[in-house]
Image (cartoon, rainbow, N blue to C red):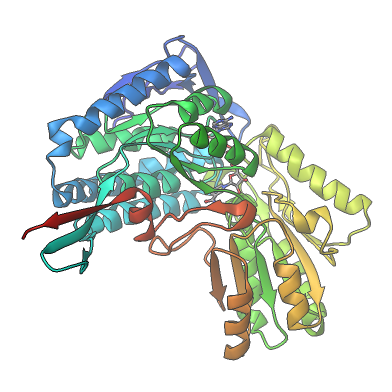
Length: 492
Ligand code: NAD
């Protein structure tokens, strides 16, 4: 990887550019934003601060690309071959991309590698799937042939958060391009560099200019202008529920569809017969992954009263062993993404302590972690009242809430008793109970005796209630990023 279109400023900050119509470019205003390394708290790169004028250019480029013969005349198999080539190029550049992702987001390096590996798998999956999407023939009447075909929406706007830039870009771009759409992507101002690099690799893989455009900048500027642009045909948004509400109203104004992947407060239910030696390490790991900044983090563990003491002793020991440190030191925990996220997480913990909720266990911060970095300790609290803020709201940090329960009915009521519904985990050896409870969960995914926060490229993913609507990942995304057309022919 060459560090496409980059140079250095006088302060030695690497200069990244937006990508519009296959060309690297700055914002039309010439303004830039600093990219801060969460591990140090200091800038290490700059990105263009794109505005509505740049959005207009990017959408026009994507619209023109949608009609260009070099894209329209590609067969599904040829689009798939380019996605497979892109997977190969990412694999060749894995080390640099993983370093960049970890530096940009603060996640421990091994998790940066995990994200790049997942991105490769997304592009392989959708590369292979591109020519396997089929319609139906419909037996309506004699002398008629009726069939359905799947067609691209057209220009898809994709707005991406900072927690998993590479993975979310790959899951959107893989499926959207497989179906023949073109893309205008607005990644997060907090972490977006791996997406810029990968979009350049996509050009190298043979995607024509304009099929993938990357607009860097602020949400309320570039993001808002993109969501309201009347030339886009569909929006997919991953981020917070508040911004999700704005995106949906922007989509409504243009009479287009949208997919919303929003937050979560996912429960892990540990029944009295659960294998705690298996359940608790997975519950801890899946909460702490990416510093708890995962929409599908199992941030509430519901523990049966009979296993409470055993569970809190194990989790106390587990959390005490967690050390937060710089991304390159690859400890259990990195820093949080930015100063405001750090303040938010600390405020949740302070309120919990003021409200008398016991802190069961807490990790440490490595002595060599830079003081300006956005570090916090891993914490486990309990018992947390099921209606307390800590058990209801998305903290998006390394904080686990433990909630005791006595009966299956009570567990179901608590598990479903938040505004969110993204993922649920069930730990029990009783197959009948596992089935009953899985069916009772109001969530987009349920895991039994395992948990897949963020994992499983093949698994349809998305929420209900305040967690959003629509599905990405797996074959479900190919339907989401296409429209069904019905054709009826009379051949009498
Ligand atoms: P955010 O909503 O603040 O930002 C997400 C994206 O939206 C960013 O690119 C941002 O620039 C843009 N944006 C902000 N304001 C905008 C506006 N007015 N118009 C258009 N775009 C705008 O979220 P975040 O803080 O980056 O991410 C954290 C949130 O994302 C959490 O709530 C988390 O649960 C959620 N999330 C959900 C999933 C999922 O798949 N369900 C995955 C990752 C993160």
